[in-house]
Figure 1 (spheres, rainbow, N blue to C red):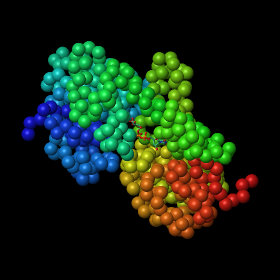
Figure 2: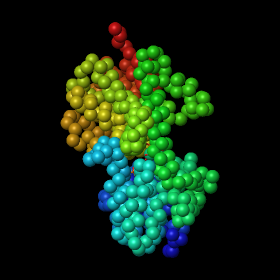
Figure 3: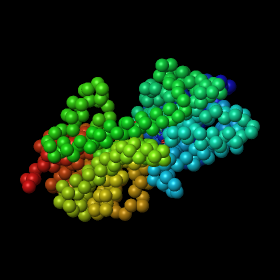
Figure 4: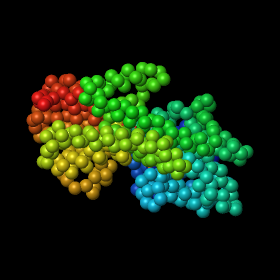
Length: 460
Ligand code: NAD
Ligand code: UGA
């Protein structure tokens, strides 16, 4: 079969895989090739056990894989065949050298640019899909402009999907952002990318801008989203002491249309691979430009998040009489949010590590993330069980800690669970997903986030 054009994507992760699957699904006239150096990952993309869990993803992949969507490790052929190459490799926080612990590590991005140059057989449009520091396109250009043979035009097209809702976000995005140089070549290349999205995204939602605005808008969007969570979480301890209810506060302020009601859910703290790394990156860029006050402002968003995670687990320790040794804790959820198998930066990692330091025995229950949980905790000392059945995990447990808002945890028979646990029985609801009054009536000591605890002890 002949295709109108071929698109390649370097990086078959949480972004590259779903994004390209949706492009292939919506554009049957294009051939889409997704490449990764990780053979195991590619094997799984070509199997029935995809490496990424996302509602709706399996169905789309099944529909287009082998027709116009291909997963491969053959980088050279993909680069040769495609006129448009998306780069969707990881851009983690740098763990060495200058900028260690803050700056973005762009080595995978630069490696991709060099690979493109090595194998290219003609002019190419390079699309930055990975999240990058502002002016990263300049860094890629520095490499690509050394080519004497071919012209490479770098376009910024950041991705705004959230895990757990990725397919929906890709099918009906709030906006698609496409940044380019404002030169004739830049604008021509940008139009090529607009044409892809026009296959299913309404024209008014496809926004074009210069590259630097596009790059910075991605970091800014994540920083603003994370800031809302830290803002509401910063008020949670005050609510717990003052007798206010954080959910009522969220609702009341969210009714102001200028504030809006989204991203105001108090929690154990945000996780995920991007909020922390992107804000650290923003902070680092500000510091590099001498903008210390701006850097400090955004750093506070991360500090409040760390405080929220440790506050949660220290509260558990304190309320369970400062002794967790040999006590059994059932941890409900390990994914950083519901409907994903991703555990990167999950608050559950911090909480479980601290529980194990206290010598507690931990049983982790998660419907999709146990495989990743095992990897995250492989070097940690202590007794950990991994289970799919929550009822198994609560047998003789002293406490339950809710880490992820999976639907299944909302609908369990907590009366039965109470009877199976050791007494006193504790529930620490890090997501405020349970009916706290009814749990209290069953006999549990209940500790929500941002609400007074409901306990059967006399508090002195
Ligand atoms: P990921 O770690 O899941 O996937 C990245 C993939 O790139 C890995 O499979 C890795 O093997 C591959 N890779 C690295 N170097 C390579 C190379 N030289 N050649 C071929 N493959 C290579 O990461 P992700 O979550 O998909 O994120 C990718 C980028 O998208 C990051 O910059 C991230 O900030 C951004 N982003 C992520 C999300 C999200 O929800 N995860 C959302 C928006 C943007
Ligand atoms: C986030 C952004 O929402 C995406 O737009 C962006 O593309 C992506 O980061 C990225 O660049 O990687 P994601 O991290 O997948 O997406 O998921 P979110 O829904 O943003 O949740 C992040 C964390 O915040 C989760 O741990 C979630 O439980 C927590 N959260 C979210 C809260 O604690 N309260 C809320 O009100 C919302």
